[in-house]
Amino acid sequence: MDFDFSDDQQALRDAVAKWVEKSYDFEQRRKIVEAGGFDRKVYNELAELGLAGIYISEEHGGLGMGPVEAMVAMEELGRGIVCEPLAQAFMAGALIQDQAPSALKEHWLPRIASGEALVVLAHQERKARYRLDVCETQATKNGSAYEVTGLKNIVPAGDQADAFLVPALLDGTLAIFLVERSAQGVSTRGYATQDEARAADLKLDKAPAQLITASGLDALTRTVDIGIASVCAEGVGAMEKTLALTVDYMNQRKQFGVTIASFQALRHRVADMKMQLELARSMSYYASLKLGEPAAERRQALSRAKVQLGQSLRYVSQQSVQLHGGIGVTDEYVGSHYFKKLTQLEMTYGDTMHHLGEVSARMGETAGVFA
Image 1 (spheres, rainbow, N blue to C red):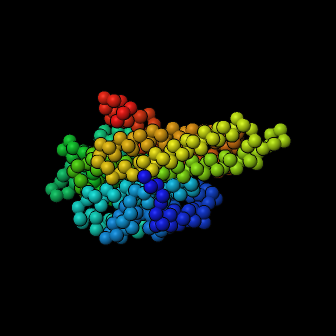
Image 2: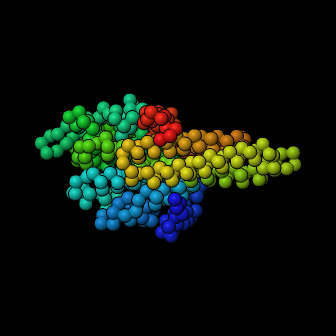
Image 3: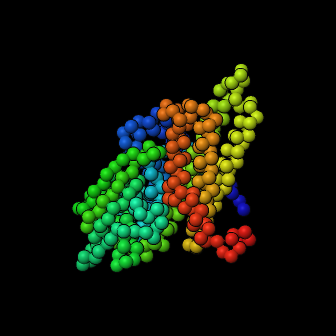
């Protein structure tokens, strides 16, 4: 199998890498974090690069690309630990394009692609524990219109978004609705997350909503799978930068008159970090390439990838802190911020134990050994 990137994909990688280097250095990120963890101007710059429209067809103002291009972009954003939730544009664009009525597509897709509208997925509830089929939010039909009532938690940039994709029970069946933040009955409570980005709790009280699809569980599962693939790619980028920071530090820090990079035991630990990074990279490729497969195969593949990524994210981040010593957890040092990002990515869209259970539940009689 050919894993070489095309010229267009490589050009995309170079463009995003140059933007991160020029416009999103550590000091710029620190200012964004101090201001709340989200900067609309920065998000619009990403959209101007065309990134928000990767999953959106050219007919609706996007680039008409796909999972591999999204993976390339997210790797580079991971290296810069960018706070702005670009992956939400991938998820919203794919869901609306694949499932929404024509009127919703025409109204929202060009705005998502241009960065004019930030549309985010609001699916998490306290009792769900990562399960997508657990939902207490209720939707009712009022004539030809719909209303949604419920509480969603940890909505990415929820108090800054323009609209939400909200799963809710309609006559006992999970459906997905679009709810505008400016609508009556919508309120948000924003806060900073562990990785210094921004999220919010979303409260809906008979909020007017537009139906995207009544086949909500299948659509939600695919949308979250796109999110998982994005998290995997972002994690690879962040781990690669973490490893580079660690090696650079070891080549400068001296003990007993020599750099600690010369100590064989520490070199072995760095080699193990590199091995975990490459295992994660291969599974990130696997996740992105499986997004177009049938639901059962795709779902199993994404959980497998998230298990490996979870193990790698924790190992690389924790070893980096150990090899740095005390400076590895100080706020002034950039490495501690990568540690926070990697820790949160491990829990995003299901932690390692959750996805290990998902993989186990999908094993056949062979228990996966010969499958």
